[in-house]
Image 1 (cartoon, rainbow, N blue to C red):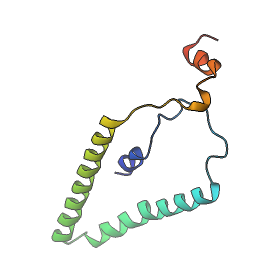
Image 2 (image 1 turned 90 degrees about the vertical axis):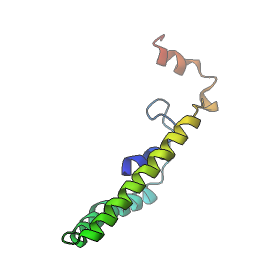
Image 3 (image 1 turned 135 degrees about the vertical axis):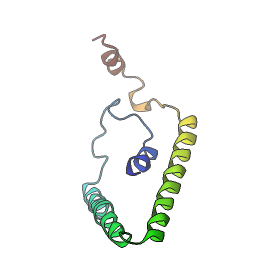
Length: 105
């Protein structure tokens, strides 16, 4: 499910264009990684312990997960149908990058 959420945030194909320096803020990134670790490592264990011997909460959690996965799948398919590739204007005039990608250097 985490991969589905992350895939919805990608607007380009990674590793197919030049890296833009100073694009990420390390301070914010460390905080986001820390929160993600807490969210995806601690809470699933707590949820499992809460539903361990209870049938109705277990079914409710499974139904919620199935509904979330189905919603993300529908959103991904809808977005994939509308997705177009955009060539960065900064590299539109640089023939050396295009020649390098095509193996003509």
